[in-house]
Image (cartoon, rainbow, N blue to C red):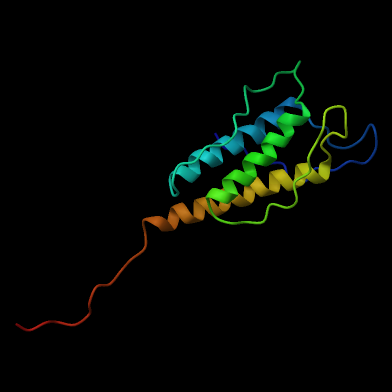
Length: 138
């Protein structure tokens, strides 16, 4: 099920701002899975990388799982409508964790792809054609 992405991530200090929680990871993951299914309605089927199970309060996403989110966004764009999703950051174990700028990029990209796919889907069956406007005499 599609959930409205958070596109206003901000950080102000160590104790103030937005913090990445397991629910945020699950929302992004779920939205990417939703986009894949939505894309199948207007494009040929394609595969994305398995993102595993949803996270729980005791889980925390690893670097490779964050990278998979971005990889899957790129796969969706490559197989559907070309849209700019920004430059992917590659995260490594025990390295820098995803920041607000990349979260905004990923969530904004999912929203942009969602809007584009829905516009394409809405127009897919409503194209009207007029075949001939003249009367023919036999």
